[in-house]
Length: 452
Ligand code: SAM
Ligand code: SF4
Image (cartoon, rainbow, N blue to C red; front, side):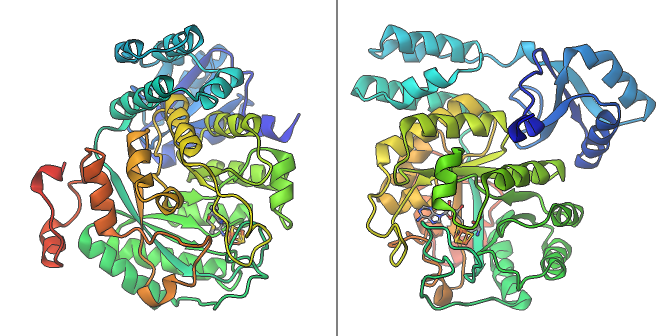
């Protein structure tokens, strides 16, 4: 059995899902199914069966009765058991009004019927280079985005709390061997920043750093506990690879999401760009995070040196097949002082096509309009929102430190003003949950019509 097969069961030919009422019930059910040797995997709950970002347990029809008995016997609180034969159908009539080829038309029909696209079809969409088909592709992603996650932008905020890193990823500006001023924030400094985010109404904070063992498991748990106790906010960790046991502890402490990108799903390229990492380990970590009950954030870079269209197609399919909840695709951007400093940056249109295809095939997930795409082009974030993205990450690292977290050169320090501008230009809505009274006191001007 290949490592991927351990986590992705392509032999679930007639998929059913069990949707539980809470994360604890879902993890307990998974444990019971594993004990009974019922092949299963965790996936983002598809559109029509639960909220965006909930997790369902997928299994094969042949176990339907057995799963039902198990949940009943164990008094599991669950929403339902459903066949994925009756998946949500999309109305894509508008797309047929574009001038598109027969091959494209066939793909649109499959998407309408919610039939999984094959790699060759994904590759075809990626290779689109005439204006009319490009517009049709972006429009199709926009329709599916609207159906799945609505018009509201999800705003998250990242505190880049340490730029120390033990690894030497060839593309990254904070790699171990790059000379840059290094900093670490204390728990108190991190909490002060979280406090500012809480006041403006941000619901999820992203704690990001290099792979920095200075922050022990206990230190991370202590920060998580304080944030949960004081602010009850959602927490995303993005601190690199940790031990399987640590992911479980983070989950128990209330960590909601963990961002660890595959970067590229191609083993050859993965090994080329990561002198200290193993592809198999990265795939295993994806599985550990999911199985700990934490929602997985993955994604990758588009336009890496020597990356092919075939590999990019596989990257997108990997996200779908692995059941990733948050998928961040952004362009590769060269960083000063790294082995890739003189390489070509990723292409805007290709990255936008990747975002669009990801929405089309992964559907009910969070897709960020990444900081990298906002750094590549002044309109990059707006265009990504129009191509299927629905999430923006604010850079909320203290002003005097952020210049040292240059993972790539000329990084756009996306702030609230920039996010408001992108949202408005993309014709979308800001979330109701922000504290607008306070934000306006801070001097921001926001049209109330922009709030949903
Ligand atoms: N150390 C953690 C890790 O590697 O997961 C978190 C921090 S790392 C800087 C966050 C992300 O930055 C990576 O997943 C990678 O995709 C992105 N990144 C780093 N260098 C980049 C570059 N030159 N161009 C585009 N994205 C880059
Ligand atoms: Fe370190 Fe992450 Fe950058 Fe790799 S991508 S060098 S692990 S910060």
